[in-house]
Image (cartoon, rainbow, N blue to C red):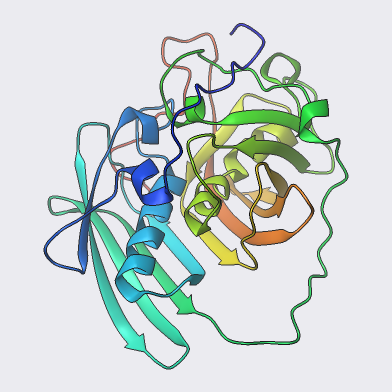
Length: 296
């Protein structure tokens, strides 16, 4: 670690579909996603939020409607070099909303399933009661250092600032006792925020677990649910993480995603298998098994 995260190299901005590399086929209900290192974790497998994001992009493009909510159940792992097929099924489509699902698989091995609702309705009662955590502005917050600088994973495509969180070297033995932590994050490659962006950043409960415990800890996500409130233009997104509890080896938490002007854009929630890792080892990331074993 060099102590400072280098800002990602600025590149021509793209939309979320291009960012992921999600590609349509001749069948409007089938898409495919080449799994690259740039979509993967340090542990060497597809980042769960990217999987959910790809499913959301496929759902929105297939149905022509914006996302209301989506929930992913993670069943197995896709590694760089594999190709993920996404099959969209539209179960019900009404005047204002559509209920649909996606199965993501590599060959005949299911990686995740996603259930979702999409649509929009006119309303004059839109309100928000949740409140963001009080933190300094992004330019007043220190950059988060990278565990392995230049590793080329999804983390290297993000710029991350510590809004209310500890950096790696300050983490052991210093838990965030209220279970709440926050980061400012931006993805310089993306031209504008979308439900896909929010799905990626909603997958931060494992980060919050390490912060809450004050330890080199995190976990493998069992699920990820995203509920979209109001997507607005923003350069930075405040990732406001609350770990609600850990029990029987599983952690549970909630992520509120705020624009840099204080608009609540989405709420995410997750359950994870809690794991610890050794930062001095040859492979310091959380390593997956081939499949998630509910008994481990």
